[in-house]
Amino acid sequence: MKKIIGILTIAIVLFAACKKNNTQSAGTCITARVTYGGDPATDGLGWILVTDSVNWKYEAPEEIPAAFKLDGLVVDVCYLVTDKDFICFCATPPKKMIKITSISKH
Image 1 (cartoon, rainbow, N blue to C red):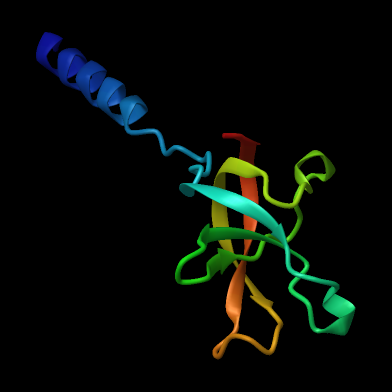
Image 2: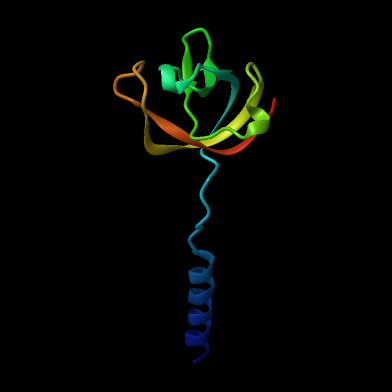
């Protein structure tokens, strides 16, 4: 009887320890430069995060907080890639937009 209680106790403890973590991770974290790529209504890019200015690589966020909409500001940013296409005539196939999970001045 003691063995059964012991085994059940161990099983319950192990089962409780294997609880699934429902929180989403921060995703990818990078240092980038906030850049205004022109008015999207006239084929501009809007506010983007330039990750490599030599090879002109950038990420297109769904939204940048107003406090960080400063052209040339260097930031540390973490993000998740969304399934939403960034529509512009500069990339084929379209880039996926990102959702910022955290942002701060570098």
